[in-house]
Length: 68
Image 1 (cartoon, rainbow, N blue to C red):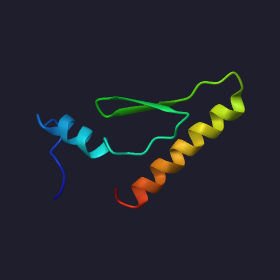
Image 2: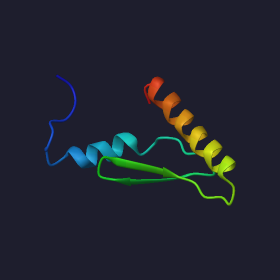
Image 3: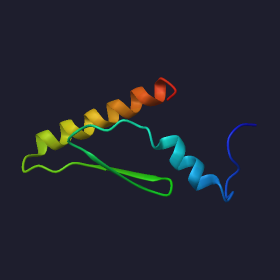
């Protein structure tokens, strides 16, 4: 069995260490609270916002697939 047991005192800290090096796109902001992650971007037009968030999701996907 691998990982950290749920509800362990060290779980939040270990999760934050594991996810702290995930890449970010320059037009997005990522807010993390416990094990929740919110990605947002602002612009007066919806197209750049959509593109920025999609780029951020692509970066996270590549990071996850590469194992790091």
